[in-house]
Length: 317
Image (cartoon, rainbow, N blue to C red):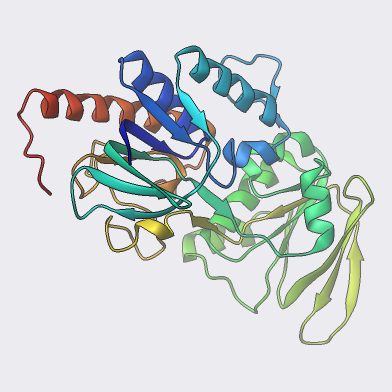
């Protein structure tokens, strides 16, 4: 059985930042990249709101720079996905596929995955930067002065529609039912924004365009009428799913699966386990906030291990 001082699960901005800070603190760090090496930025086109890149940077390029910086400090970066944990004993146990690892500390940076509609055209135009996005704050700037559509009925959809309305010529909201799920405040905001049009009882049949979005075909699920709208950007805001399933029963989480931390820290309810990034953040979900919590998790882990090695921490759970 391999024994690891600091095990990082996940390799987005949170995981890499945690790895850089932990390694610079002379911890022996092993990172497993997970099912989405590099995280959600690997499917993002140009990133213009991350400090230090005055001309912007492609998402995959930025994650490659994160990786190179971690490698510079001798972080052991490996392919593989955590499939099971046992946090009932100490040292902590994590399985990477069939391989069992004992860890003195674990930093969870597994992130969250956007929910998608599941359309083939959505996947095609998302994967090649064709105009489909799950983050208006990240990508809305590229559609300044243009007409876009956004799918969703909750607070997030309303918030992102309001954001887009400030920079786009027109925003069409696609709502599957005859009502919103959002709070009254958010509903009031979008219904009173002149350049937001709301289509209730409407579902997306197809996103149009070969290489870039040129429009979308919709269907009214009451009348069965189909119609097309010319747009250049298509945003999906139907929620995210935190990648935290394997921690159920060990780490405290909310009803949606986001991991809970002790306020003012990245500490979980299990000693030696820390969490950073979108696995615990359902509010901001930005690369820079994820990186910030990655730094915090590394510092928390460093302090925990210093106390442990000094004999000041009970090594029983």
